[in-house]
Image 1: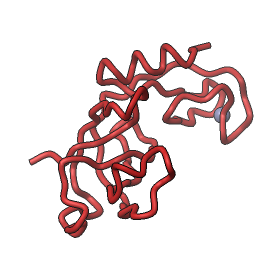
Image 2: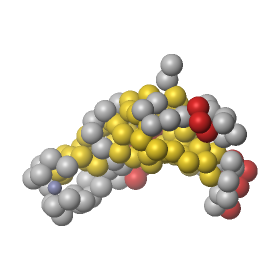
Image 3: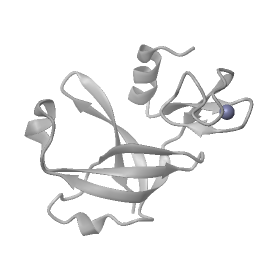
Amino acid sequence: MMMVKDYLDGLKNGRIPGSRCKRCGNVMFPLKPVCSDCGSFDLNELQSKGKGVVRSCTVIYAAPVRLKDSAPYVVGLIKLEEGASIMGRIIGTDPDHPDDIKAGTKVKFEPLKQGDEIVVAFRPQQ
Ligand SMILES: [Zn+2]
C-alpha cells in the first residue's frame, strides 16, 4: 500500500500515483485503497504521466481560507490518458478569461506548491 509520502513524492516527480483494480479493471486517480466500482482491495499501482484533456472547468472566487490569497483561480475535471478523471487546478491561464479553457483543451500535469503542500495542477499545452 502506498503511503501519503509516496503519493506526494510522485507528484513532486511529475507523476500522479493512481490505482487499477485487478478484479474489474477500474482505474482511479489519485490512488485509492479500495476500488470505487467493485469494492475490491486487490489493486495495482498505476502512474499517470499527467497528460489529459479538460472535461469541464470552473473559476473559484470564494476559496477556502487557506487558499484565500490564490483566488480567483481555475479548477477543472481532467480526463487523463490512462482513462480516469481527476480534479485539479488549471494554471497558466487568466481566471478573468476562463473561456480560454474549454472541454477538449489539452493539458499536462504540473506539481504546484501551495504553502507547505503539493497540489495537483495542470497547464494548457499548445
Ligand atoms: Zn474493481
